[in-house]
Picture 1 (cartoon, rainbow over the protein chains, first blue to last red):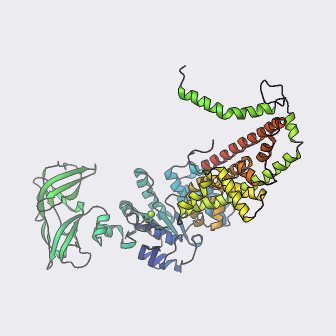
Picture 2 (cartoon, rainbow over the protein chains, first blue to last red):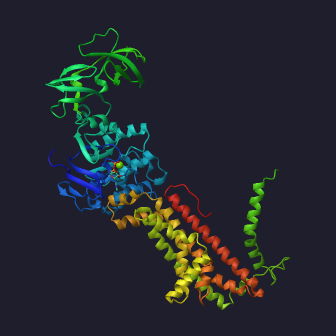
Length: 358
Length: 268
Ligand SMILES: Nc1ncnc2c1ncn2[C@@H]1O[C@H](COP(=O)(O)OP(=O)(O)O)[C@@H](O)[C@H]1O
Ligand SMILES: [Mg+2]
């Protein structure tokens, strides 16, 4: 990354007494698909609106293209926004909506018409230009909002939970479509979402936020496999937390046994005393009857079976553990789905362990 | 056919409500000075006579001046109040809004007398101007109620989206907010105009020697011979009110449709 497109340095925002953004520092590169991920109320929208210029920050610096944006109004920033409600102008047609931002562009009528046509084509709405805006479905409104913003060729497109109003199927289709679109136009996308799956699927990098702070900023794989804190681990996907005890380079994991601390991942570098040992469901394997085990094996009883078609999730009660652990198995040909109450042997691997201090 | 008690009630109710209004045009066109059946033939003479009364013309002019001023004043003030109420949070908002809406439920006589007392204490002569003040007070709640409906249907991000797309705040208001609330503004203007035009009690107390139409009408009731003329004038007023009310509601509905919203109540 040469010059970052967006640079945020120690950004703070207060709403009265309430500290909504706490020392946000991050850089977003040109052409990146960047996501702000966090539970509702953590300040994602506030940060996005601060980048767009709709919220004044209390301290710190936000710069776009190397220029400090303090005091620059939204209409003079190289950003455009897709609002959570889409904010389609209900009294205008689809074409008028998409062409709204071109009013001050100095383009001729023919040029504008062509640009609008292209923008609508790009989001797959070429046939709907004459339709009144209030007669659109949720998915169509979203596309109009996208076209309306992209027609201005901004340096940054800001999207506030653009998919949360769509039903599941449509959402998954739109995720792929948004990724394609972003690659096509090469514009930096900054996406706000509370849906970790959505963030993992679409983003080049993700900033996980809790209570106005960035807890971890990394690419999806690192975030998933190497979460920096227990809270991040818990928020992204599913993770089992087993009680553990670390001392002198060894780790005693309840229900599993003793392992070398060196072979595990310790986000803080070192750990001693009581700790939580994180294991993702797919890193645990349910062994079939007679299947050769390994030294790293625990036995227990199946407590719950959740069948997803392609996958089955099992909750297995292991000896010596108060809580069942969750593991997932791909339903490949020849592997039977086990029943509740069946005895189970579970193979595990210390390399998949993430050790958090308690 | 089975007679349904609620149906009978509805018919009686409507008759009771509208019979006097239907009688108004009937006797306005009746060729006789006595307001009684049987009818004595058709005439438009009473309407013609209306054009011959200078005092009536003066009263009409007064009423029009007052109604127009009130419509504009109440709608402008209502615009500010409605936007503030839907857009911003401020301390005591509920109390303040409730206070503004109070004239809606206060007996008009009380409002009128109170206003008169205040004006007398301040040493202000009653005139067209004081009626405008009183009527504005009376119309404000209606203006606010109508305009609040327009504003509360507006997504706040519409304005921001316009700014985001390069417009200034003023441009966003002109291009997005104004078109969306214009039907509400027109509806408010018309409704306030009618309310002021038809209002009697406040006008009666505050008019001094500049009577409005209803006050003039009331004065004419003392002369039985003038009754048919009064009927003719009343017919015109009622007709005008109904037409304006319908137009106002058409605008209000068009506003809602523009925003793709469902109609939730209204005047008609
Ligand atoms: N205009 C505002 N005034 C006061 N508090 C606000 C305002 N906007 C947001 N907040 C508060 O700031 C916090 C973060 O809000 P927001 O950025 O919208 O969260 P998110 O988008 O992550 O759900 C919330 O607790 C919210 O109540
Ligand atoms: Mg939000």
